[in-house]
Length: 306
Image (cartoon, helix red, strand yellow):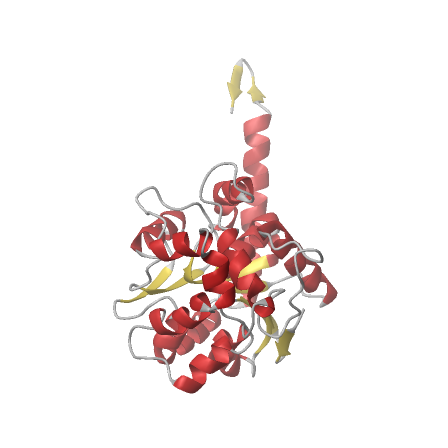
């Protein structure tokens, strides 16, 4: 698995989605690497990472999370982490975070999800088409998903030709587009789909992270992660620092990078690690005390207190 490891200091892990790669975070890395250690992987099959076929790799959510866990362990990056997540990076990263909430200190959410499609949200026709009988021909044969993203996912101003080419460069053949297609196919939209129960579990346990500082940067012209997703996030994290961009699309860091990058940097600085450590300890102790209180009655004479 290819990855970037730039800078020194507190660790910031940035997880990309589909159909992009670590290139998406280039400006944020440049802003933070003088004070933070920026760890940015290309998921297997994406960017500069190997692109194995189905016989050699299982393109599934559970495997992606296992990759992330092993990679962070190998880099000795398992404590005091800040997560920055976009698109599929949110589902992968928040699965890890809900398993190891004590390892996480801050969260930055950029047009992403970590729960099932909101009730009022229909599966977009673009995803239906890519998941259907013609999906392989369109996504892997013609590169329609990756080529279409550089046009439709930026809405404030068109992406320059050079930047668009850079996004699509790793996905230049049928074989090299396997992850792009498998990501779309792996979206669990109904019970029984692979990964559906894992998404359910993560959705139910997001509350393990509700004591953390959360930053949300949101492009409102995203046809997938739209206002239904944003409202779901705000229900989970009502105290999140929210920045909305009505004229921006799914690639919100491309559309609103000039605003978002310094805002994210300020967000990290405004929540220093030593304070977050103390809050985490207090929160952990409070939950432990609460569990003891609820489990064992306290007797005082003839009165039982719970």
